[in-house]
Amino acid sequence: MSNASDASASPDVMQLLTLACALLGIAFASILLVIAETELSPYAATFDRLSIATVVFAGWWISQRLVRQRLAQIGTGEDSAPLDTFVLGLILLSGLAFSSSLSIWAWSLTQTSVANSTLLNNMMPIFTTLGAWALFKEHFSQRFLWGIAIAIAGVIIIGVEDLQMTGGLLGDGAALLAAMLSAVNILCVQQLRKRFDAVWIMMWTSLIGSGVLLTIIWLRQEPIFPSTATGWGAVISLAALSQVLGQGLLTYCLKALSASFVSVSMLAIPVLAAVLAVVLFDETLSLLNWLAFAVVLCGIYVSVSAQAQQDTVPLNKAMALQGEKGDF
Image (tube, rainbow, N blue to C red; front, top):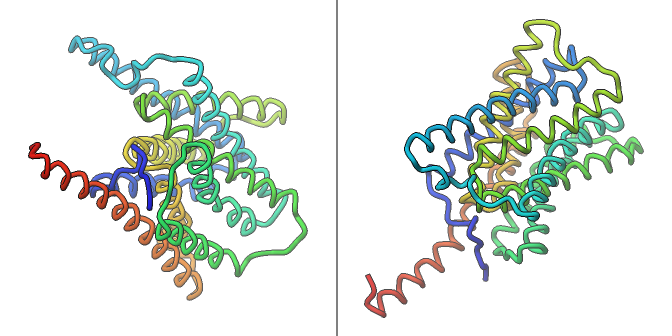
């Protein structure tokens, strides 16, 4: 009923733990962004996040190259694949989609309510799954699709209390466009991970994103860097936790996990962010919020278990055929 792609192998415990660490790092973004925005615009804070991360990833990548050279293994790494037109197009599209998604979502917050924007931005798994089906001919079991539906229903419940029918259609449309662009980024990265190292991909996507945001900041004539230690601590933490750890590990996971699987898992980010806000800022959540969180996690569990099941069945069939042939 389902044809799994190379990137959708049955997830093992280490892959799921790595993905969980990535989601936790990304969940810190909303909290750190609030602190950074006391001094900077969302565009400047995001530029600082990406530019600092670019330096970290570049240093990491250079270190990897030096180690390979010393071990006389240069050319054996994933980042040694040829840079043809298709690859260059993918890396450029990924960087533009990622930075544009962040920028457009930040702008949508000025045109519509936070609840509306967050809710629509979390529709990303729908576009990721549709893109994987339309572009890469991936097929999904009914159970996996039901998991997506349940998780998104939970996200809708989270935002329903604060949902506003304000007529801010432009802002709502921008939030939805940001979700589409985020899906484009994940699909591009999944393809790049078939040939390239995660550090190399993140270095270039962060660099391209930095360039886009620097242009926006220049046009808006806004300050680029914070002026206090608190501001610098926020943007450095944003780069380290959300970009290097969070997005970096997420990119790493896309070597073994499908884009659709990862995007569904990302619906846990609002839950993690809300729990972090409770722990760090003593915020209170209603019973409806907690029930919604349970629905989201239930939907993610259904999708995760469906992914594991759909890949185990073909594997068992292959092993049975191998046994019949006597090949061990």
